[in-house]
Image (cartoon, rainbow, N blue to C red; front, top):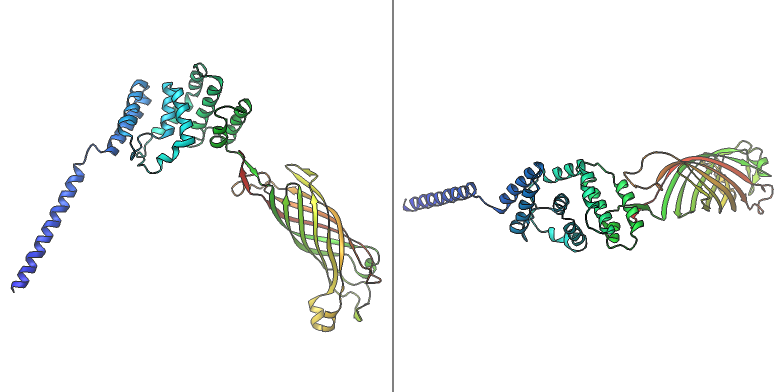
Length: 398
């Protein structure tokens, strides 16, 4: 009985202490004031209100207090972009130059381990008003005592700051054009490398590309081949490896002609009108002589093979046919590709004009080496139409 009373008393004490501790934490939370986060939040609110009222003196005072008294190794009071836009409004252009140069060369890693300020509308309002009064800010830069290199850089940087998010007023392509003009005007300037690495974001297609296509076609037999087999339709697929203007074409062409007369192949009789499979595998090298936004023309030359064999259905009926083929022999091919580039958007995958879908028209003149097959000497013309795509990865153009 005494043990039970002792246990109940012990549990009661534990419950009471826990309740008291909970109340103490709750009271501490409710009475917690003047924290760094709270000061930063209220300071940013005062700064935003003063900025919208046009009180730049108050803006300067609040900004300086936040940066000197509140910003620390653990807390961020104002983000770099906010500091720069405020400095544009207060006319502290030299501060912008020094701060931007330091941030992009040394200082951006200092922000990774700090506590960021709470989300508010300060940056949005800074960008919005800067965009609405852009000409005024640009005019103040132009009439300042800065040198030409500094003025041109600040004009570019100011436009870069208000481009994109959150208003999307200026496209990155427009910023890139401005950056190109700056680089052209100041090829060895103090800020040229900074512009190339941090403001101009241009991408170019890699020298290497890969393509594929699926096609249907038609083959015309000539010479002695035309007396053995009729012209026939074909299906196939191709894979391309591109490097600059050169292309390696790897293609698998399968035609479906019929025999025009009874013939004996390797001692086995092939009946008239017997279906056969015509194989024309090919590896060729092409070179682009015309490459515009709409078309690409590439003559090519290569090596492959030619062979005629019975179809599987006939082999099942006559197993001996499996031992008879015309070929497989080496062949040489010349011809040309004409790709019609389709306007389907590929920017979400590979943002460059060297990645596109196409309709491909291909002509080839194939010369099989049939010297070991008397009565089958001839050439082959083939025409293909297919659809496919070419893909090139992108890399930063600095």
